[in-house]
Amino acid sequence: MADTEGNLDAKQFRPDVPQEMAGFHVKGAGSLDFGMKHRLGRIFREDGRTVMLAFDHGYFQGPTSGLERIDLNIVPLAPHADALMATRGVFRSLIPAGIDTALVLRASGGPSILKELSDERLAMSIEDIVRIDAAAAAVQVYIGGEHETQSVHNLTQLVDAGMAFGIPVMGVTAVGRDMARDARYLGLATRIIAELGAQVVKTYYCDEDFDQVTAACPVPIIMAGGKKLPSLEALTMAANAIAGGASGVDMGRNIFQRTAPEAMIKSVSAVVHEGLSGAEAHAMYLDLSGGASD
View 1 (cartoon, rainbow, N blue to C red):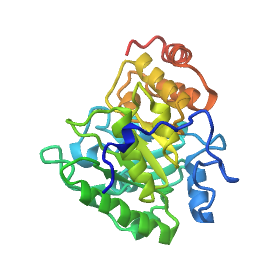
View 2 (cartoon, rainbow, N blue to C red; view 1 turned 30 degrees about the horizontal axis):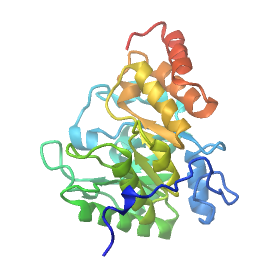
View 3 (cartoon, one colour; view 1 turned 180 degrees about the vertical axis):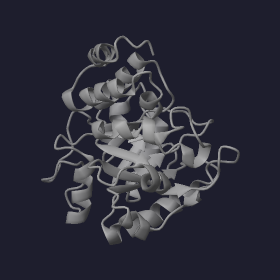
View 4 (tube, rainbow, N blue to C red; view 1 turned 120 degrees about the vertical axis):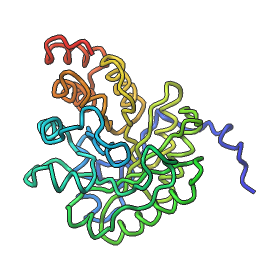
C-alpha cells in the first residue's frame, strides 16, 4: 500500500537545477509530436513563459463584475496577452476571428455556484475544440474534492482525446474551501495532474516552498491569479511565482477588475517576460494608469 505520508519526507526537489528541455522551449514537451509543440508554442513564447488572460468565470457564476460586456472590457486587452482562456460560447460570439492570440478553451463544466462545484463533466467534444482552433483545452481537477475521481476521469478522457488530435490539455487545480493552499497540497495536486498526462498545469501560488512545487512538476506550471488583490500584492505574487519556477501567470480578476486593466496586463507581462520585480512592475502600473489606487 502506498505511504500516504511519504510526501512529507520528500526533500530532493533541487529547484536550483533546471529540468532538461530536450530541444524545445516548453518544459516537458520535448518528446511530443509536432502538432502538440506547435500549439504549445502559440501559448508560450521563446522564453518558455506566458501571460494568459482568464475570463471563463461565467461558465459557473454568470456575469461576473468586469465581465458584463466582454466585447468592451476584454477584447481590447487581447493583444497584450499571449493566450486567452474562455468558453466556446464566448469565443464564438464575442472574440474576433482574426485575433492572433492563442485560445485556451474551458472544456469542463456542469454545476453553477448554487451547487457542489466539484461535480463537473467534460462539456464539449474534442472535435469542437479542433473546430475552434484552440491551442489547448482546460479541465478542472478537484484533488481531495467530493467528486475527485470523476474530475480525474474528465482529465484522462480529455488527455486521450487530445493525444489523438494533437491538442494539449491544461489541468486546473481546483482548491476547495476546506483545502490548504500550501506546498504539500499543491505539490500533490500538480504532480497527479502531470502524471495523468496533462501538458500544462494551472495552480495557485503559496508563500513557502513554491519552488519545490514547480520543481516536482515535470510540465509547466502557470500561476492562477485568484481573487482580486491590491495591485502591488498581485504583481508581487506574480513576480514571486516566476522567481519560484512558474512558467507564466493566468490572471483574470486581478486584471479585468482594475481601474486601468490595460496598464495592469502590460505590467504583468513585464514581470513575466522582462523580469521586473513586483515593486518595479507596480511603479510601471502607476505610471501607465495615471496613479490608479487599486
